[in-house]
Length: 344
Image (cartoon, rainbow, N blue to C red; front, side, top):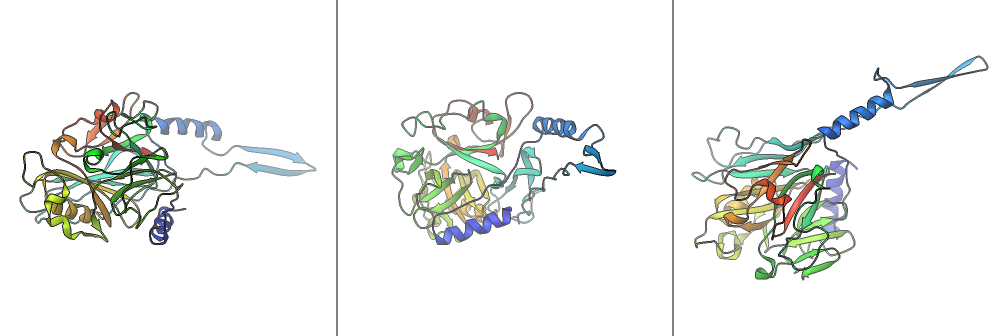
């Protein structure tokens, strides 16, 4: 199923009941690509042409030709974003491929946008959900218990890592629903904004029970407050900052993060300093979100990194300078939950 067909299938499922999604192929370039090319060369011969075997039978020449190698279709790139402030800064709203380049292109793109005049730029990321899989990781401290994905991205998974970003509020302080491995650390709440991951690794953002219900096709759910964006517009309560978490030191403006889903089913993430809830919602809508949720806030907890690979540990870069943690913190034990993105 193509990414377009996949998105249509996902959209229909949102209105009809539990979401159903389809996966698409993708693989890392770099040293993975080198191995693939060597294998392909061995099959094709030094000339690069398919090998041909001939059999003479009763004066006739019968040939058997290997099927031509298929070409990986290019991955779609997101269209440029319209800056919210004029005149635009150089490169503002223009996407750049981030992390490892897959066989058909990049699966993650990043850019920057300012939510209003005088505001500092925020980092924006777009994730192709057909070319990636997503996993919810428990922290070492919360949620309590032992989980299949916990604390850090295992060394065996690091070669496929493309990106990672922060989770939501402390789940026990806000009674935020959290579900993985077939059971809930905190009971899932109807009507709450939910980051949902399906069995094929495809994610979405939804209103729990309205858009998605728990079933065998769901492997993980991370809830946080109510939806920040719904139907492609900010919800009315974005003008009530007290509903969107406590700011260290008081006030309204702080580092905030959010994640949303586009009409095609891809993810968008936004984070930056000096944001109020309305500004964060405006950024997510500008990035194409039809539904979005606030994730964690305050400088200490905001993180989104992308990764490239050589022959050793993944080399990461934050999507916005000034983020508190280096990209390597997702590779070492960490107390809070987070989300990781891998090549499919």
